[in-house]
Length: 399
Ligand code: PLP
Image 1 (tube, protein in one colour):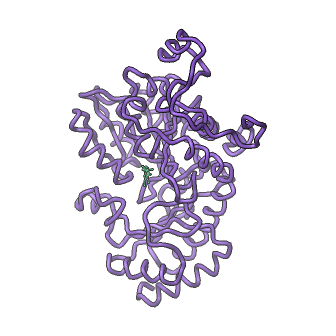
Image 2 (tube, rainbow, N blue to C red):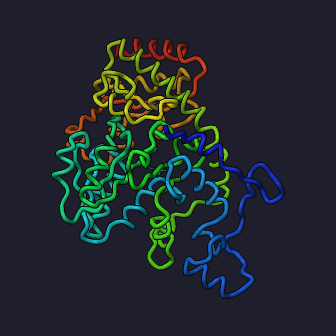
Image 3 (cartoon, rainbow, N blue to C red):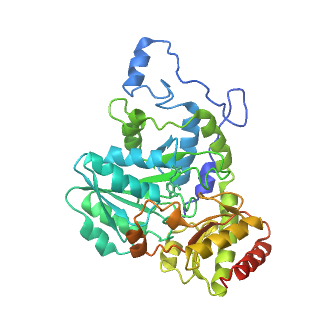
């Protein structure tokens, strides 16, 4: 049976305190107990259904977490104040000082900076590898490796992880496969394909309105209990707690994710095909020219398409900047980082979201200064958008 992530969200039934169709928003940082013994048991993690303190958990956060776990097909999840909060918490929970991580070398710049610059302070070392080379992945694993880390579709190069094969390697060596699914919610279900842990930046497609920052760790009950443990849980002790009001608003947006993703994917495929036909160096997992098109197709939940992100390489940064400024002036989108908004967003990752990656490393992984990343919007008439973009490209001399 194919996995139906949007149905899993739809099938959850919540009522508010007074029968509201949305659950009531929890507006308390602390909770009362009728007996001191129950309070003690809750501290120890033995009193299901009781709330203690909102850094630990709160009803609004649990509702959102339940919906995200349903979407990813995991036992449960823990929502966090940002995507980085989710990523750092889970890595610090799974690894101890002296441990080793094998990571894809093309990942979000912030995650790269954490692994490369911050984690070594705790004697946690990372080997960055070409994830599409499964032999290279396997040969980087040592007796100290605890985690294999990747993005299902990588930021910004749009490399596609072969999650099933990576999961076999992870299982063989007894390590945890952690997948950041921020770029492909609904389209790819990493847990169903064998990942142990799925993380998201909710800031992007899942919330979809560019008005909130959030994250989630989806995994087993055991992992989430460990994250929340009052004695040594990374989520509890490092304090990346999502606010209950935000959790409530993100949950409401999550319910329309399937409609938005279909439109983002449809528009991105249209633009990618058109850009490629203009002779532009275009990368989009939905194009047959993408080296991992077959891998994406094999793994995808077909209803949702190949996602909303594409890149073009216009050769030089000054050309990229000129094009982006002109497209913004013509109201075709915004020159802004982030993704998953109703308007198209574009940026040059080499000097923005991936600037944490050293220049030489950028070159070796194929991240050229003229690369523009598009998060394609929900435009009703994408043909009109394309013609206006083409005119901008002609005016700045790219085509
Ligand atoms: N993962 C990916 C793939 C991202 O693109 C980002 C942010 O751009 C993050 C994680 C971090 O998320 P946040 O900004 O919500 O901390």
